Amino acid sequence: MGSRNTGVNTNPPGYSKIVEALKQLLSEKEFSSITWAAIANTAGVNEALIYKYFRDRRNLLYQVLRQFVEKYIAEGDEDLKGITGAVNKLQKIILSHFRVYREDRVFARILMLEVRNYPDYFESETYELVKRYANRILEVIEEGVGNGEIRSDVSSRHLRQVILGGIEHLCMPAIVFGRDFSPELLTDEFCRVILGGILPQTTK
Image (cartoon, rainbow, N blue to C red; front, side):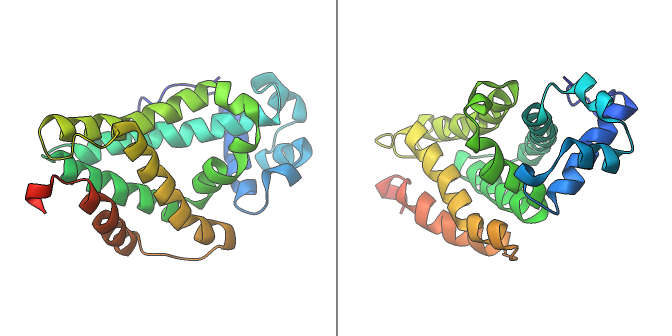
């Protein structure tokens, strides 16, 4: 349930209160320890209203993640406007990804530590939206292969997975233990290692 990200919140007030309540609770504890009663109390609604909008706790979790992803897809589209060159676009995407994980720990924890524990997540509409986010990276890589910026003997899909996996592994200790990190520093190191290996030999 819920609306697409059109810049205006068209969800019922109760729905939005419940979503915001879960976000607040996730900033304090793990999802497995959050009860319907705690969500209802934090939202200031009765439990029956939660059941009205969400069939179970996992569905609520997926809808919270969906709102985050819709937001960052829209922001990512704006970030890439005016940037020319596939490599420059990849650098911007990587920096933005690190910044999101640093600044929005609830989103990072949901995506990296919570939803992947549940097989039905991979059949949800939210996962389809996450794949759309990931496909932007694939499109930029293929653009780079097509115009000669990126080596054609590198698998575009494997490279996308290396980028996404590398970002997550670099951020994971900070996410788990609540540590700070520099998105700019990690982007610089990451791009020197990853992007340096995919440029055509003549441009190195």
